[in-house]
Every structure is written in C-alpha cells, then in structure tokens.
Length: 113
Length: 409
Image (cartoon, rainbow over all chains, first blue to last red; front, side, top):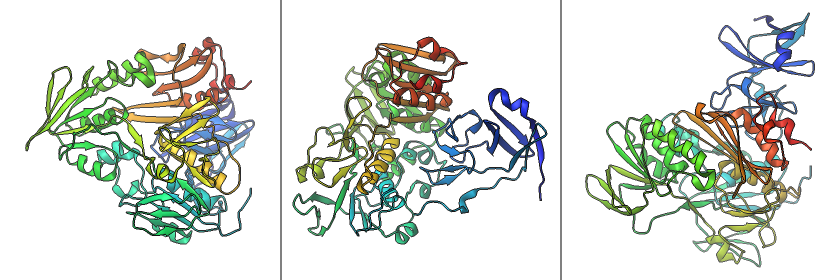
C-alpha cells in the first residue's frame, strides 16, 4: 500500500497555481484553488493532452485538447459521464503530498441513467 | 429539476449524434416514459468525427465509434429502430408515420435528421467517395496505404483531415480547393493561409483556385479535370464540399424550413411539441442575433441536451457560443464563435511560431477565435464570446493577462 510522497512545496505551486509532477510512472497535475490543492492524472483520458495546461474555472479544469471539463475533486466530466483518475492529496507543513496511486471514482453514486 | 411522471412517449427521428445524446439526456433528466429512437442508417448510432480522423487512420477500433450500448438501451427502455425510414409527422395526432405505412404514437417529437454530404451532379462511382457515413469511411480506409494516390475535392475540414490521414498512411494526396485560400469564408484570408501552410507542410499537393469541372472513372484510376483545365489522376477521389440539411421529414410534415428546420432558442419548431436539434436545424441564436446552421459535433451534443431539457419541461435557452476542432498533420485547431464579418483580427502569440490564437473582433466585440496549438486559450475565448466582451486588443495580446479575466463586465 503506497504512502504519502511529498511532491512540491506549497510556495512553488502558489506562483502559477498549477504544476505537473512525476512520481515513478505517475504523471500528476496539481491545482491550487484558494488554499486547497487538487491532484488529477495529468494525461487526459480522452486524447492524452495535459490537464496541467488547461484552464481552471469554477472548481473544474478544462482540458486544452477538446475542452473536456473535469471536476477538480472527483474528476467527473458531466457531459461525457466519465471520470479522470484523481489522487489523494494533502498540504502539510508547507508541503504538498500525494498518494501516487490513482483512483477512478466511476463507482461513486452518480445521477441516474 | 422538474421530472415528468406522466408516461409520455418521446420519439426521436434521426439516430445520429444528436438523437443519441438526446435519448441519454432525457433519461438523465428524469424522463420516465418510453423513448423511441428511429434512424434510416443500417447502423446503431455512431460518432462521425472519427470517420475523418482516428477511425479512418486506423488508430481507433470500429466499435469505439458507437454511442448508446445495447445493454444501456434495454435497461433504460430506449427502443432503437435502425434501417427505418420516417415519412412525416402527422400534424393532427403528432404520430410519426413510417415509410412502411406504420405509425408510432408520440407525445413529443425531436427531429435530429442531420445532414447529408453535398454532391456534385453526375459525379458518382466506385472511386468517388462522399465521406459522411461509416460505410463511406470503410470504403475509403482501403485506399489509405502507401502508394495510393488520393485526391480530395474541397480543402475544408473534411478534405484536410482526409489528407492528413492519407499522408500518415503513406499515400500521395492532392487537395483541390476552389477558393484561392482554403477556409477563406470561415477564417479569412490570413488564417486560411495558415491552414494552407499546415497542409503543405504535411506533404499535401494543395491546388487552390481549382474548382472541379468533371470526374471520369476508369477501371484502374479516376481522373479529375478542373475548370482551369488541369487534369489530376488518382486512385480515389474524396469529396468534401459541405452538407445539405435533411429537412425532408419536416417539409413533408408542414414544419417551417429554410436551409434547415427552423427552431427558436428553446429548440422548438413551429409545430407544437415538435423540437429539433443538431445539423438539421437553422436555429435562432440569441448571442449572435441571427439564425445559424452549423455542422459541429459539439452543437449536436449541446443542442440535443438543450432540446431534451426543454422536452422534460425545464425551459432552457440554447445560446452556446459554438465550438469545433480539427486535428490534422499533428496540429490542433480549435474555433469558437461565429463571425460572418469582422473589423479586426487580433493575435495572441505568434502566427509564424504556429502557436497562437486569433480573435475576430467586429466593432470591438469578440465574435470568434481560432486557436492553433493553443487549446488552453479556448475556454477564455468562449467566455469572451459568450459575454460579447469588448476587451482592449492590447490585453488580448498580453500573455500575462488571463482571457477569462477580460470576459466579465
């Protein structure tokens, strides 16, 4: 069972409010909104563009490739009804830590149909 | 969120992208009654963009093109009837009358009959492909091998995407474009030249100012003669010169049509409880103050979702800024908005670098934007267009300014 890995200082991510990091073979996009950091797999499930180059707006990140829009917390894309994998992330002692094992929340309760 | 609990039947005429998305959205928005999805193609609903991109090139499998898997349809009581032609909607009862004489009772009808490829009169044959359907694409795939010579008529998105797939497969490609600059009407001369450059850099022999005069098929080749007197030989000619809306069902029903099925911003036709969405519509667009007929995949999705919401009684205006993309020759192009004319073209980034966004301003208002390998600008561009923003052009050019920040107010 993988544990927490420190991937960045909070101060590093504060400048551009997003950062792409790599832990082993996991490419992770970090986004800072207010004081909260979100972590999603950087490579889009659609056509493999980088979410870290996308626009963050209203709690979502928009992939620059084809504008698929993922909820930062759950990775959910409501028009496609699909999930981008996400990672557990926490900010502790000025550092950003992730568990570098992605999860896809597709078994989470969603709207009917 | 309103939920209709009366067991009303919704019949969707046209089982393409818009029809399939409408069926899915009706269920997600709580419509409980029967849904019948009728299409005249022999295939279950499928997506068209891969037919000139990933499926054509072989990067994607055939079954990935399909929408609405069969189990979902069974579980969700969506009756998909393919290979079934509709004659008209009976104005009195709103029953959907099929060509075979039978009738499907309906409480609400959604017309999503789409569009068909525009054809050149008299130009047909084994070596002539009008790329629109899965069958057309399967026929074309056989020619995507080294040594084949593919001629495309039309240097627009179909022509250039087929050219891109052809080049990637090692085929020779000639593109015949009637205008002096491809896509000049939509993008203007300067951006059209950028597209021409992208095609030529990909190894395409792009011949501009060449309209097709005649096509002659021989057993071993096809010969295209242009109005300028040039003759081009190839193994296959692919024609992509636009589409014509399939308005015939609407017309036979007495529903108002002009270039497309006329709908308002709630996707309503002029017949009570009959809606329309997608390529077939000429829709009143509140953002642009005019009617539009577009062929974008995204419109089929968004307008179908909007129509479905209106069908379940949740009044929703369709005022999406419009967006389409093209992936060709390793370049990602994205266009949002609608600009039939413009007074200024403002560039963010650098055109020569091949990475930029061009904003089309009409009297100071951002009406459209073309991003070339700068998809990260698209969200902000759509916000600018949706807000009818009048930003300072210097701010648009300034890469340290966020586009979304220029949109509001």
